[in-house]
Image (cartoon, rainbow, N blue to C red):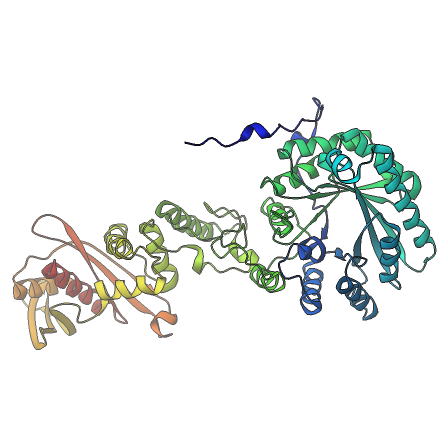
Length: 563
């Protein structure tokens, strides 16, 4: 076996923070959210959004409740510049929403940015320059002082241009890009140098955004960096501390959560984590994680499927079917043990009805995000009786006895093993009908009956049943303590088999699409013992409970003879 060339890499050095406090914190309030779908998300697309897709994304973000939205990099793109002008001039920005734009700390780009924002009611100017050790060496060829000068010169021009346009309520945001690759003390130094120029106050705070432009460490180290920064930086009460995690290590969500625990106030990200390379932090997952802990996410994902479809259209990228909370299969269980637990959990939930969600394997109620219960359990070769019985109960109103669940699951298992494919609810129902309900599904077909008390024995009933035997209509006579006992006697003698009743269950089925909206029907289940001691079931359904029971006996007899 070839060994991977791991010798090329060096471990990330942790922050010296032995008395860290963030592990003992919990998140009790949503951070300030800033969507960067129209900037970071857009630049990561194979085919960037045009005006129509940009506007649809913007309107969706507003509808979801984002109060801060980064709408583009207007100095770098004519499309972005035109879009910023369009939403300002058409007054498409609600009063409670602030747009944000991005610019590098370059004079010509900053000037163009302010041109794009002319007439805006309120705007965040997000300016940045890279501060990382590696980029200082291989990209810019500058020392720390040279990088700091880029940042402070940019801050000075931003402030000058803002002062010249007092009709806009300006908010300033600075990012030491590649924060995670920057010496922590230097990142504090450069941010404080920018603050010295901007002169933020408690009433007019600066946003300091600390991006994991490249995710370089485990999320606990990112949290240490945030806590260390906040301990050391001056004038904390004049700062909104913002996070901008990426997902290079696949832990962007965890890093953001731990960063908020470490004291951050704000999170920038994209709806479903779309961003360059392996993505930005996933705001939907972050917000829904809060929701699952009883914390108001302050975003509205009650129709999550619609949000996903909009994002797929605007980004021309699919949402993964196993995406947390959102994917097509997010609330789907194939495993039999999972399905059985979900089925029982939902039954207990309905019975308890105390408003608290507690169902195994489902961290939230699918209905809370506009999803239906129907797709929660789907059937394939890994499924068991729980999932199958859930489909029959939830979709068709049948409450199968446990041993019938086991018996029928073996029928479905054979189909699943033979095809290797998912078994749809419709196929489950069709198979159940063919196996147990349809007449004729064997030699005998029940057509009617009448019963009378036995004049000689008060505890006995005499029954006359009309059946079809191989297509020939006949009448059977039988006696018993009730209609079922009498019919078993008559049919057993006629067929030449011993039908021994082991168990009998029945229940009503409410009107539904599966019975055409008809009035309530009854379904009956009979379990009978065969000569070898094994048992098998028959099932009958009819508006008359006695007729349903006799159909169930007929079903059992047909299955006994066919076995």
